[in-house]
Image 1 (cartoon, one colour):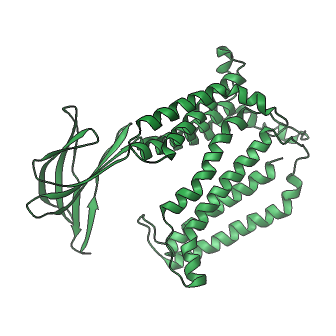
Image 2 (cartoon, helix red, strand yellow; image 1 turned 180 degrees about the vertical axis):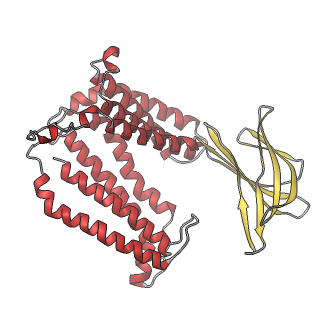
Image 3 (spheres, one colour; image 1 turned 45 degrees about the vertical axis):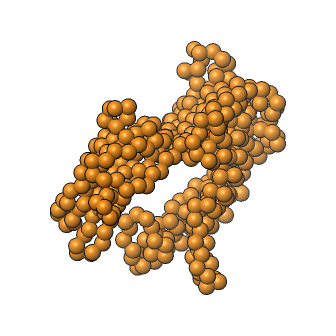
Length: 383
């Protein structure tokens, strides 16, 4: 029943990627990345967009009716959960799309210069993702066609209790002021525990059958767990983010977020095409040195353009960013320190989600033998 909708989403996703390429390469909106602006290339990309997406949508409009399945499903079912899942993700993507283009639209249509920043995206995007995270474990555990909501919720009581406990713990120990941080931790644990519960239930609570589950089930669990890890990373970043700005003398040590940072020295360095003011900063914790970082301020004489090069110490549990600023009166230097806890969990979650998708696609049930293609198709429930 969802085949037609799935194809439409695939077309729109590819269309959005081309629109994004057109926007940044044509110079309509300036990207933070180093893309070369070329209006002529933008016109070429726009032509590609019109041909491929226009053709795909035309073909879809002509053939969509023949792809509709005749099966029906109840209001409470996995199909309904999938539809709601798709709607929430589509609306969230549309919010980001409109927020990105709205300043351009306002300037063209109303001759007004507007700026849409992080507060808009946080307030408009977050509610849809919170609702999505709440629904995912419930929908994944429901059977096809028709389900009993009460029975599904009873299966998830343990996951709910675990999520509530971790959310309360995050609320008790957080150093930030965001009320969403404990909620994000709870939702992340809810997603991970819900994925584990689904695998356990589908294996009939038998360890020997757990490893024999189809790859699609394992892939789905991995993808949902990856989303949970991303939620936890974002929430912890909000709860324990540390920022410090100060003037430090050469040889001075200061404490930030449990780390002792020492400005060991500042040197003038000549690069291949730039002049650099490079600081040497030592980072220690509990008396043990964990990193030596070299933040820089560079000047490129040809362009007369100064840049700031942050030094980063990556880690599983936190990232430390150090930035050296301008010299101050009295011989000190402006130093910025940022400690970003669990930042890499955001990227790890995305990688696990992608791995879950690949694992699901490798399920043998999705492989069609050459001989089977000639056999008449039989109506099958959507999976």
